[in-house]
Image (cartoon, rainbow, N blue to C red; front, side, top):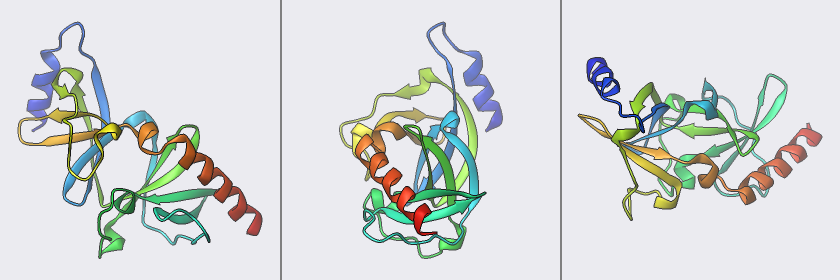
Length: 172
């Protein structure tokens, strides 16, 4: 598989660029986000629930002294809860200037692909609204849905999480 990726990179046109992505799974689908958005990946840890948080916010975690809101992408996408929570990971990301954790089923790999193999999203894709999808990467053996995290977690949601995080920090 590594060879196939290298072969794709050598066929770049002047208008193509290399995309570096972190891939993860959620409900059997494979997704990817820009590697520059991802700060770190952690094992599942204890999450402190916050009263009156939006349904998709699991709560907050203490990450080296900083209170970080944690969002369940399964809940956000309307998927059923994962039964084995210990296998899940928390991807710490910067979304619209807010550091937050996103719970995913598994984190797969860091992938380098040419932008020339990315197609625009179709009108309807899996359980995710196509407005949050920046494209579909066509690899030899699979399709990967590229998410635009700034559109997925909008300004309203990030403002809500900032307020919730500040409230949780004061209470602790």
